[in-house]
Image 1: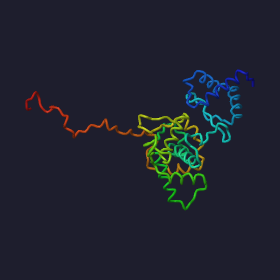
Image 2 (image 1 turned 180 degrees about the vertical axis):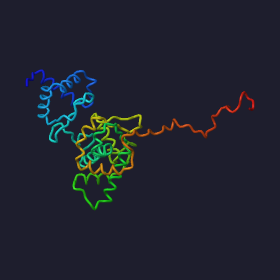
Image 3 (image 1 turned 180 degrees about the horizontal axis):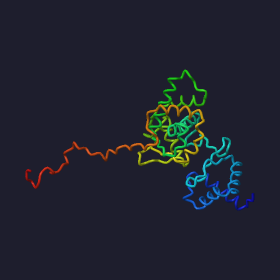
Image 4 (image 1 turned 90 degrees about the horizontal axis):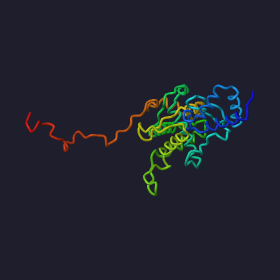
Length: 277
């Protein structure tokens, strides 16, 4: 195999592009060309694989439209940490974020086979919070049978103890959701996924509604073997909530509602030129 210094520089550029989750090949000519080389040139692909192996990264997908999707090994410098989510400082907060992240995957992809289905998945903050709360309340009722995973056991207990909604009562954040409630953390995780290029706000379906991107499906496919996912996916199979493949119905704007019972502003449509019909 003959790899030139220029080839190695191009390998570095390709990996640099892949590490920018919101960058798409269609929007960057250099990225598109280097991805094409990776997909068609054996030597270039092999060289890229060696470099990625040294970085503890693996290729999850090389689809032409999505770009090179990379996944870190557990020990990799590039592995996502729960502490990377904004405002996560303590152990309980990390437990919440881990549970909610697994909850997003289970809510959207409730079976391992669902990861092979590329339909768009929608997640609304309110619906995900309800699903997680009902699951945690069920676990509380079944508390006589503790889970094998101590971290998961502690996580659902933290979630169940926290109120669904609490708003700040003083200071500059008065009226806003407080970090002392689970709805805040559900929204925080979905916003973080958006910043990572894994989700997007679906404004047409109403506020606090997100649709998960293809990158999310590819990256969390391996989560199907994790204990938290399996527990939540089992709960989702019995959940009567919305099908995540169907876009939620947007809420009705009160300003768009016409009160037909209000006759104060009616005109004389019932007469013709002042004459009785």
